[in-house]
Image (cartoon, rainbow, N blue to C red; front, top):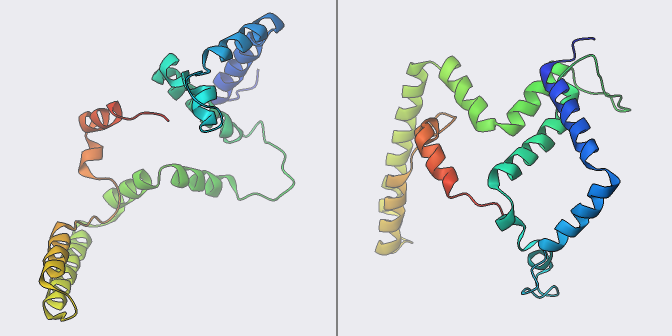
Length: 192
């Protein structure tokens, strides 16, 4: 058997398993399960989503939803997993490396930017940018002092906002690099 790549093989196995679950008898069971999600306490005319899917989130585990969305994302990227299964397309495509970089950058812009800045921007350049930002903030505060069109309350609020402004060359916040804070953040995440 030709080497088709682990990702492609896993996706093909997942698709085969999914198709086997859709036998005629089980389709009827699925239709009955859909009825369980209908929330009769909601008015279908005012909120159709809450009426038809109101109990769905409560009855399904967050991990199952996460895995399902992951499968959909993996399926959308399957054509890039192996060159032995090219997907025919009428329109010319970018060369694979450029398209791959484009896909990764569009999905994880902050992460790619962080890695680039971490490995390719010298520390001295980062310090120069920090100095420039500090000078710009000082100049802005100086301009606020001379702005006669502002009242004192607005001027004080503007100075406070400038004081709270932070900068970063590019990439991720330090909080996002700590796994504990990420886990804590995502505990409060709900899927609508």
